[in-house]
Each structure stands twice: as structure tokens, then as C-alpha cells.
Length: 479
Image 1 (spheres, rainbow, N blue to C red):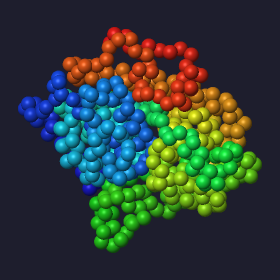
Image 2 (cartoon, helix red, strand yellow; image 1 turned 180 degrees about the vertical axis):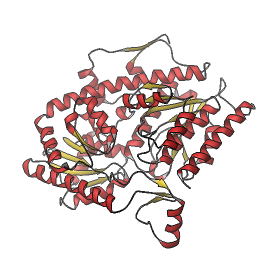
Image 3 (cartoon, rainbow, N blue to C red; image 1 turned 30 degrees about the horizontal axis):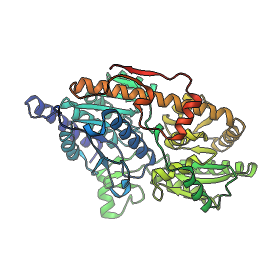
Image 4 (cartoon, rainbow, N blue to C red; image 1 turned 180 degrees about the horizontal axis):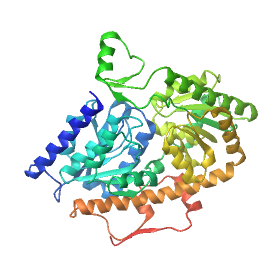
């Protein structure tokens, strides 16, 4: 199965659905029944960022539309790995070969909310972007709610971009940055500016993290330096029938197989780039630890990151490793928030620790961390994964985190509150989309502040709001 065949298959299903709707075969929400929404995303692989995003999206949408009027479903690739997640939501299994699943599930719901952060880009996997486009396109083909929530757009291969332009034009995409909004608008796709949805996430209390870290050798006093490395050069994942046949007949491509017909990038150049990244990361940390009294820990935000964590830990003996395979999202984010400094190649590693004002820097493989650092006013606190001078530059950035810690934390705190307000505004876009699609659906009315559009906030965020929110905003009045 190539990308072309997958795109053709999903596109054909959308056209079939459109034709069926023209013949009067579709079914929409009617007053008096619960609104059934399918949350389409990449869950069930223990990617902490993806899981946290969807957790908070569900909480916010349920809070705005009311739990007693809605019935939500969320995709998962493994029920075991999402056990205990997404309370009050039905989980549905997403198979590797997903077009028939999409065709069926979208038909059985009254709308789709696309969840994936890296929603419209070819950097990771065209198959994932095709699934996002397909979910939205199938919903809009029947004039159902078709909403992308907090997504991002980047470079798309020509085939994928054409599909996006054709089938997302009747959806609303709430992007998480201006750059994504500009790109999608150039394709004629309706957009609004939003943010990521992980900002409201509440992990286990700090006491949990302190207990785990004590067990790993922390003395409860030394500042903690958390590192979130990745393997940045194996992307994108691509479907290949030829590699799959070679794998099952000769055993070839074993090390680069993601699963079934999907394979990572591999080869000597991938290995060379990865070794440069690991070496630069490791040597910078070794030098920093010699200069400063810190307790380093490694966190694998996604199961795939465990390899990079292990490779760095082997060079820094005694460094504990916490992986998303062993710790769920409530546990892992609690550990992140107990730290003092962070260097991360994971976007959500940075986002989820910002509410506790961890002084963070990024080593980025794409535009997500770059955009976030620019928003914070910290353009001097990120590098790219392939920087030829990664080691000395990263060491300098880590020194800057220490020297400018207070001002960095100030910028972080203000950014968190600004994004909470933007996330609240996303709730008004959701209401507007509901009014256009299902004008008879009962929505709230009255004078509402920005806090009313967010799910219940934890004490950490409430304290930040008291500190940094100088002008509470009214978002809606008698809507």
C-alpha cells in the first residue's frame, strides 16, 4: 500500500459519502437526542503529548456542550495503553488499515473533531495526515460538524496538499499558531487562530513526583535537570508494500519496521545524523553537570524515545530514565513539573511543564518548538536537531537557562495565561460551529468570562492566573 493508494481509497470513500448524501441516505443530529462526536486522533501508542491534548480537548468540549447532552468516542490503537484515560468517553479501536473504519465510524456519529497536533504535514507520516483529512472530509460530506481543534500545518507533499485543499474546504480548522493559519488559508481552508489544548492538563500532585524521584536517587534538594531526547531522523514513516513483502519473506527491514506496512527512514545517513545528535546532546549535558550541581533525569515522552534516552543514559551513568511505557500521562507530567530545568526535543515536554515554570529550552526537529519559543520571546533558547555545532551551542543555552532563570520563568508564566485565554476563545469557535451546523442544539447563554470556556483548572493554574492575569476578559454576552 503506497501513499497514493491510501489517498485514493480515502478520497473515493468521501465521494461515495457525498453521493449518498445527495440521494438522501445520510443522517444528522435531531433535537432531543444526544450529540455523538468522534474525536479522531493518534492515541494508544503512549505518546504522552497526543494523549494529554485529547484528554483536555474532551474535558473542554464536554464542559461547553454539557455532558448530559453529548456522547463522545475517541480512537485508540491499543486499549491497554489508554486504559484509565479519557474518562466518560467510549474508546474505539483504530486499525492500521483504517479507511473502512473511518467510513463506518464517521457515519455513526453526528460530527468529527480532529485531535492530532501535527495534523496537516508530511513530516511524520502521510498516512496520519490522510486519516485526519479523511475524518474531516467524511463528516463534511454529510454536512455534519467537521472541526479540527488546535491543529498545525506544515510542508505537505503535493498529493497530500491537493487532498487537503479538496476535502477540508468545508471544515473549520482552529490552528495552534499563525504560521499554520497562513498556510491553510492560502489553500482556501476556513481557519481561526487557537492554541494547543494541553495547557489545562492536571497531573498527579507534586508529592507523587517527589516520591518517585527520591526512589531514583534524588536528595530532595538538588535542582533537577530533565532531558527529553528523541530519534529525530527516522521520520517520516511511509507505507511500503515492497518493504513489507521483503520483511515477511527475507527478514529485511526488521529494524526499520514501525508496524505492518509502515516503515521508518533508515540507512547510513540516518545513523550518522542520529549519532551527531546524541553525541552533542550528551557531551553538552556532561559539561553542564560538571559546572553545576544538578540531578539529571531522562524522560521518554513517547515509547519510541526510550532508545534515545537509553543511549544518553549509557554515557551518563546513574541517570534515571522514566518512559511513557512505564508511567502514564498523569505520572509522567507530574515528574516533569517537579524539575527545575529542561532541555527537550518534545514539544509537549515543554508545554506540559510550563505551568510549573520549569525553565526550558528546545532542540527541535520541526516548527513546533520554534514557534513556541518565539511566542515566549525566547528565540535564543532553541536549536535544531541537525545543528553542526549542537554541543557547544546547547551548553551555552543551558548556561543561559541558569543565568536568566527568573526572566525565563516570567516569560513562561505569561505565555501560559495567554494560551489559556486563547484556548477559551477556541470554545467560542466551537459554539459558533455548532450554531452553523446544528442551530437547534441547546447552548449556554448569558455573560461568560474566559474561565467559563475552560474545564475546571487545578490550583497551579489558578495561582498563575492570579499572578499574571491583569485584565479578565468577557468572551461572550447573551450569545
